[in-house]
Image 1 (cartoon, rainbow, N blue to C red):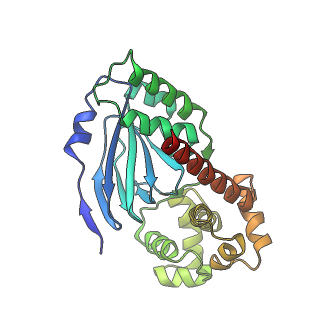
Image 2 (spheres, rainbow, N blue to C red):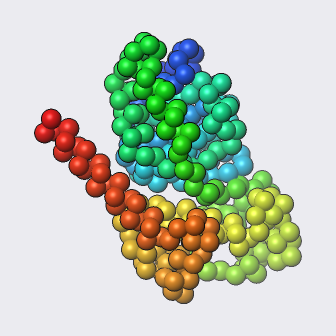
Length: 278
């Protein structure tokens, strides 16, 4: 059962500090929904642990481990926790936010950026901009500027017929129903549904479904699931067919993404052991 919660008063207070970057932490339970809200600052939505689903009026993103979502200033969004989540997020001053971008983007989070976020959380919110906190903030901005964007987003429609189809596919990404089935499901003709998808989402039906598949695959790869199993879950005839689609969208194979996730986990483990021994 989804339980709705609201923005923290502390998060609201942080918006008015003069600092370029401020950090905020909050823990959530599985299936909590952070109600629709916005911030005068830009936000780098990142979780030290857990998976979030972020929805705006025009799009939906699932944020796997070791990824973050850039949310520009003033954009209304809601966040659903798909697991228990340890939110460790950044709020970035409007001037610097403009340089990062005016659109939501899913970003790779480097090991350095993860450590910088955690380090800034150890500072007072009203840190000395000429001291350690200020240096951390500048390094954070530099890391965000160099972060690789992942071209994955699920554009969201407004037409109720297309919304019904999109919700059903999102709930079961591996469903292999035909366009004719979905047209009947939505109470529209196949021709109407074909026309509505690019009008409502900017993507043709097939490409919209591909984005859902990529999003689901990134999450499963981050959890260590085998490529063959992911391909089967998503309804592909073979792992090679799924790999071909994945590489055509992201320019890397699923195995390369999975290997990166495993290397990040190993690096994190080594870092934690070093901290304990130190």
